[in-house]
Amino acid sequence: MGCSTTVSVNSMVNTVPKPPYPRPPIAEAVFAFHFARHLEAKVVDKFVRAHAKKFPAQQEMYDIAIDTANLRQAPRSEHKGFKITDADNALVLIVRPETISVARLPPYTSWENLIEEAKKVWGSLRKLAGAPEVARLSARYINRIDIRQVPGPSAGPDARGGIDLGVYFRFGVSIPPDLVHYGMRGFQLSCDLQSPGDGMTRIVQLAAAPSPRIDHVAFVLDIDVATTAPVPRRDTEMWAMAEQLRSAKNTVFEACITDDTRRLFA
Amino acid sequence: MIRVPVAGQGQSNAVVQVLSAQAVSPIATLLERIAATTPIPKAGEVATDIPLELQLFNNAADVKILFGDYLRHLSLDWRPLVFSEIDRLLDPAAWNEESAMIRRAAFRTFLRFVDHARPAKVPSLGVGHSGSVLAAWIAEPLRLFVTFLPDDRVTASFVSRTDRGDEQITAWQGPVVALKERIAREGASDCVGFAGA
Image (cartoon, rainbow over all chains, first blue to last red; front, side, top):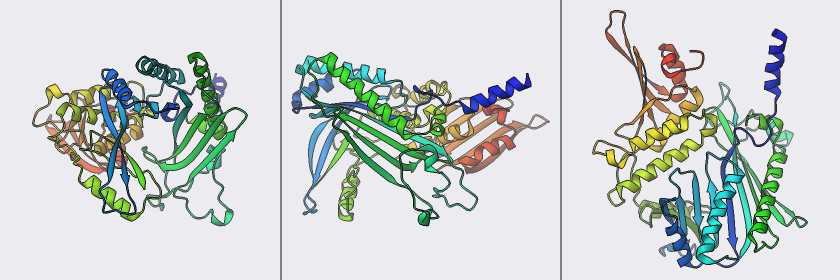
């Protein structure tokens, strides 16, 4: 009996969770339609008004233009759409003439749930504006991975040493031996991966960031995949293309992390 | 020319954020000037030019989104219970002149404690005059009242009874990271439901 207990405990410790993870590190998941031609302002307004019940918090968005050559000139502002939030504060739509983004904040449930919301947005937009031509689709997943780091007694409050990135990430920076004794306070890495063969772009970014958790350091793994091939006009084919984004972003995520990282999501 | 996206209620309470890494000092100064001329209500205060309902909604949304940062590290029952407390505290129908908005930085301190110390019991929540978060755990004869302040600071009052039945209060203040140990030292682990208590 003692033996079987030991085996059970060890197997729990060594188990590497597989996707879908019980506690995925997703801080924000965004699916976006990028239109070939800008939506008319009245369509944007109508769309936002039509969603006032489900998305009661509606904020206008502005671009502010600053002439750097003449800083004494007052900045000019231009209305550029809306950010609308649902009553649970977990679903956000950014509605601009050039794009509509469907953003899911925690609690993240699933890709299916995100796409379901995107389909509702598309259905609603079709009613208001026919079927606007979509130039590309994109999916962006911002993952925040908190890794425990207890600072040593002599470490300063900003100390970042002590975490071997290679243990957690297969995508990252390499510090030359001559420089490794300098404590690394932060880094940011961006990689644009193109593959003409599958008609998709993948932008992968990894950065260190302050963690909201006590005694932890956060690493933000930001994966942005987008289509480059023409987006089909038929809905079923368009949504099939969206599924390819899912597969692509999952492949990138799994390629970038290690089993030690996966254990954090159990 | 740098274009800076801004989200806000019209432009009256716009929050300016520099997204360009190329921002240089004069531009940053200019943005600060823009931000300085756009009134943002201070913590705990109610602005007069924005409808109260909208301010309360935004305050609730802000702290609920902040809660999302910790969501996956907490047990599932915390979200509905804490959200229900937030909705109660920021209910426009129950708002009066003594009420105050929840200060984001204070709520963050509360969440950092919950994530770090893992109390099993969800406390009753309140809001102090300055927007601090008040939490009460009660397991008679012990009562624990904690005020969560910005910047990881907390004050705690431990209320218990002596052997003779008199009420005694021990007050403590310090960093949030030390609160768990202080609770254990005061014999109040049961009160908050620490594992193994």
